[in-house]
Length: 108
Image (tube, rainbow, N blue to C red; front, side, top):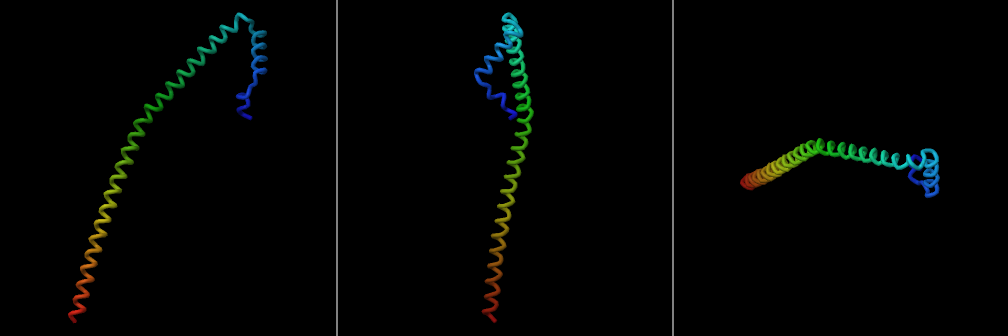
């Protein structure tokens, strides 16, 4: 119901225009429309300026977040590689120990 003003029919628009014509007179309506147009232009200009300011201020933050994210990803990949290397070395050493134990058992 909050957005019911978006669903105005053609008849309602005509009725509002007639009431405005009767209330303000035919000479004042162009001035009112001109003032409303200027006001809307200024509002849109201010809105665009705020949006540009927000984008300018958040772009630095986004860049920093992306830098941190890539650093974390790079470091986590490096750590994963180190863990894989240590794991494979441990497996190799375990295999060597197992072979040595088997050879000692065969000798005795």
